Length: 348
Image 1 (cartoon, rainbow, N blue to C red):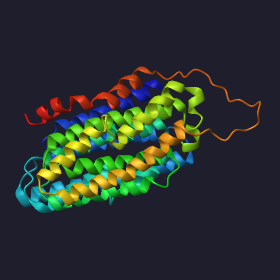
Image 2: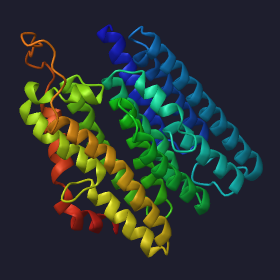
Image 3: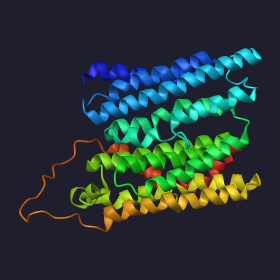
Image 4: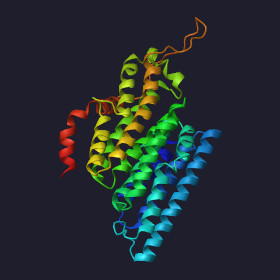
């Protein structure tokens, strides 16, 4: 892609998200979301492959549906209450409609079915943008409206954690596994949204760091299937040692960073007398942990099927910059000791 066009599209992507962040009026927020969607579509379809075009079409249709529902709900709110302000949502009907529209935008269960299919059609760089940057604007709106209907949020959160766990079990494609991982993590964030918005924000930040690391590891290895991961030990031995730790951090094992949000969320749910919800969420984390362990096993403990003896694949040095990966990996593995500082910040 022409660098000027790429720069324009990335600028549009950033501007759309920034407009949504800065807006207090529903029309402006909707406009930011639309700019965001329209800027990423050419990035998605830049490889003229049938899978990419199909995934782009699916993405466009789901985002357009969610944006239409959001616009209809905000208009309904203005009609019922006379308010266009995002933080003045008082009527339960538009609040519920907007919550569901934003759930469709980020891919929460039960409106998640588009996400694995769409992510599977893109390359890892576009998949990374879709799994990280594209979650920011809808989450900014969710944090602003503070949905008051606790039942719908807990149902969305529990369904997402369970679907994210079950869905990834039988997958062999890394991008689909990451899509289900994303659904499960978003479920954890939604569970605690009404009780502690600052904890939701912290969980989102840690999820972004861990997902960034995981995508960069797969991109460095040029791996899109579990079998392709098995050859990584010969290409990048240091990466092979770190990759399982990154995946186990995503799974939430101590003493890695991924434990921090899950621990605090379970603690908060228990404080709110929601012990059964916390138990279900913790059990669903075990489902997710299974497929992270499966990937770790494929990277470190298996040899790939070998072909003819003399045929060795070229192992050229990677041209990908490794500094972003080094920084994000450090954050993914070592932030757990900062838990007291983070909890202190959450209570401010």
